Image (cartoon, rainbow, N blue to C red; front, side):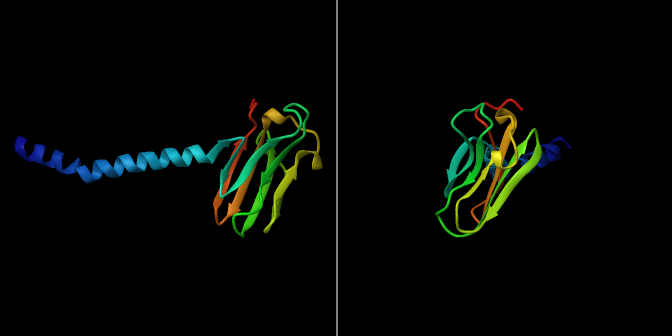
Length: 131
């Protein structure tokens, strides 16, 4: 009986299964990293959260740059997790300015950006994030 239990254990931990588990772990880590990105980065086009002249003056942007290809761009602003406003454009720069909807605390704000078919919506935090 001990031999069949040991054989059953070896079947569960095949090299293929171990490789698959490791690959899935790295994939999941990459997804989590990109789901909550800091400030601004480039994935086909530059996009994210942009401060105005100061990180405390209440003027900031959610932006998806133009170029790289055609598709639908979306840039939204959230403050303390609540939607404030945003834009949706085609083949142009999407540039939502916070002051279009009021005067908000920058450190508690996020930019939600999307450019289909190149990347799905994800969140960019202010570099002085306090939320």
